[in-house]
Length: 490
Ligand code: ADP
Image (cartoon, rainbow, N blue to C red; front, side, top):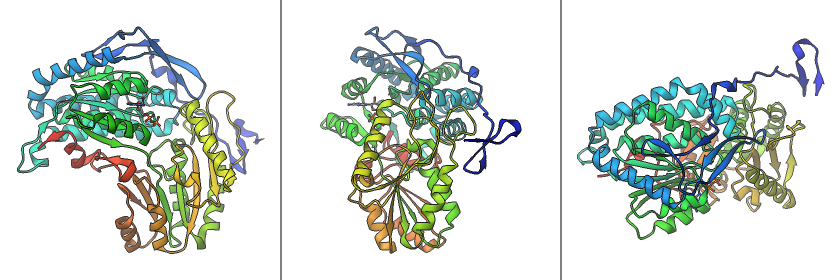
């Protein structure tokens, strides 16, 4: 890194370095210890056990969090059942809506606090948590508040009824947003909830419990239990649940599917992905390069719909890869709380090792590795933005979900071949396409087996737009009317 005089700015790769602009973390008042949120209050776990949630950018312990066992799950399910039968399912939709509106507004009011905590606990850049995660979480509550008293219109001619008590399990990549995706439609439709956040990112879900208290949400309507995979398994096995909603790995999704087979529990699964991001030769290349970067590097590739397979038309492959390398050199990796940061920390040591292992396999199988020179912090879990070229569909890195800032580049010659490669995967969550011809992207979108297809953009979300997958990416949709359908009986 070369120092360039004025204001302590430095130049890297010929560009001006920004002075640090860290977000103030004092806005978050963390407790040293969090209990389980059952029946409207924080209580001690039955086992008396606690575990630590770390900041993955520094390995600094942030707080102790209670470990829920089967007894705690039972306590929470009973609270949720009681709230369902005595109150929530009987409340008119317009009354339920008031609570959801209140929660949405408080989330907006406390958005900076949530954004800072999300970045501290999960390692994602503050720009992402501030501009994407938290506003979308609030938008989800607003959107579903709007539906709560209009369900008859969503399912015209039929009578929608709530399912009952819902068990929900979420992953670590969008901790608050996934909680909002799960809780908002469930409550709007009159169900009550027991939710388990991921073990590495429980803190914003626990802060959300404070929001429920602030919004006077009746006790037992939402219960939040922290723990690990075993806690999740106990939740899935509880006999008095009417539905399980899970977002996470395909492997765990499969176990859950087996566990609920033959029971009355309904199931929705949002699992892994290996999205194809297709660039045709007539695309606006610079915009496409920015879209590729947004699709895989911002957020460390910790997105199940990440554009991890770049399919670029052969005639422009060299140009696109050259531009991409130049852009990747300019990405800023470091302190997640710095407003200039593009790439934050990898969520856990486990995930970091998995990324390292899969990239090593890629190189072993013949892929060519490109990583820009960049200084990584000495503490915490970090991985540089990575491009793998000379990849074919036979390579592990083109088939396995890596869940890190790693892009595998493949080429194609014709639109047919692009569709064939895009569909040559066991997943089918999302895809992206860049072209200036409407007919071309409409044709691609109609032939690709993916729940979401972005055209000339990537990673755009809206509560009104359903999200979910095909094949081993799961089933059921979240968001929009389709998402409501997963929480009602008609
Ligand atoms: P990821 O690969 O994204 O970490 P996982 O599927 O391992 O995804 O985890 C997603 C969520 O599922 C987490 O909250 C985790 O604790 C939970 N979980 C892990 N194993 C199980 C299981 N066997 N049954 C239920 N939930 C589980």
